[in-house]
Length: 257
Image (cartoon, rainbow, N blue to C red; front, side, top):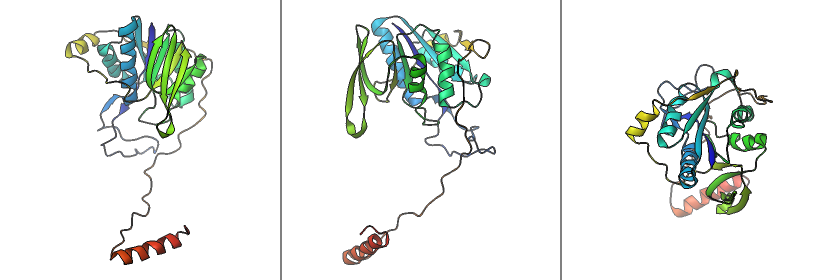
């Protein structure tokens, strides 16, 4: 079985003091740490598990700057056989749709039965690339996958829906799956494997080696800004009767009764 997994290098902002830079279109990244996108790490682990079960090859692909090669080397250390970096510097300012077309132009030439991506990227939360990539490649897909079993070229896929519901799909391969966090337990790369991966070649792909049939950026980032602080919660004080009366007045003032 031949597998391709798309991974992305993203800044870790969950516990950081994030500020918009002078351009108004990006954040200040000087003091931020970077790592593999969270759901991509689960997608990579799922790809490795499939490779261990069925054999074949696993190729990790990243559309990013030169620093993304560090992320690709982690994928190699964990179990990927090949790594490809599509040079982001050759395709600046792309939105999710255009990014999917660039990825497709490279991946179509890589033999694959299964294609994995994360369900979303934590730097933009668009969740566009996976589904669009499948559409461009002309293969079926499933999003927010929480379990996948493959037998006889058919993937029995379970995906998360609203309200805690699960959907069971039978999808004929080749197909693309966007992986939800929690589907597995991503492994750590050993120190020896990291050292070995540091010596492996990463294939570089740019404008001179890939030519998307369509690459149209249909959306433009106009501005990033911190949401304005609105009115905070009001604490009602007094006895229970006083609090009840105040609450009733608030409800009437808001037109809820």
